[in-house]
Amino acid sequence: MRAFQAFVRQAFHNTSIYRFSFWMQIIYAFITMYSAKWIWLTLHAQSPETVGIGVGEITTYAMVAMSLEMIFWPSRYGPQNYMARQVRTGAIDTDLLKPMDFQAYMLGRNLGEIIFRFFVLVLPTWVVGVMILDMQMPASLLDGVLFVISLSLGYLVLFSMNFLFGLLAMVAINIQYIMWAHNAMVRFFAGQLIPLWLFPGALRTLAYILPFRCIYSIPLTFYIGNVPTERILSDLLLQVVWAAALTIIGRLLWRRVHFRLAVQGG
Image (cartoon, rainbow, N blue to C red; front, side):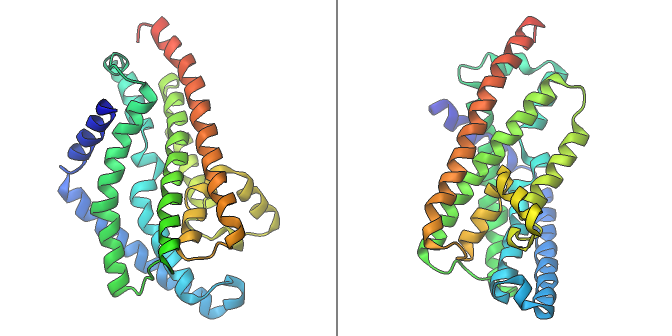
């Protein structure tokens, strides 16, 4: 546990160095939040019945979704890039020699970066969003608590997905195009760009079957208070099940990849 905490602190420190990059990302977040607000403001004015919720709720949903991209962008902030780079440079041996579970090590590295980005990038954009862009706070304390819990579970689902792609990167030459497709699927089927309840029938059914909605859609519906009381536990349980299932699959596949790397001498 102490080793895990040390890796989290180290990742937090490393991420805090690139200050210019963070200012650019904050500006990018404000632009996307502002754009999302006015797009959905216009759409709601044209057809409020189709949108299905109030104008404040839908614009808040869109703005929070855009801000979360700063921590949930798979191809940029996941562990798979690090894993692929370590194999490509031959430095993976140093990671394998560390006295801790490799999957936990990857989680520690990634979690430190995510925590830093959440407090330094996401929270300030929310403060400005509330003050300037009329972004709403969670409807109640319970909604806020459920959002934090659901967001944490959504992160674990996304991390587990990215870890699987990291394993693929460790045995494949180039997965850049696969990661582009993965990023597009996350943004679309997770409900970041369009709320899932607005999808047409068959597409909505598919989106509800896939694990992507655990990343954005479920936490965001908790944030705006759009989850019926009888569905709270089932939605949280769904996130737990997907996080556990993907983690187990990752562990099983890692054993095979680890064996292959050991046979090839790293």
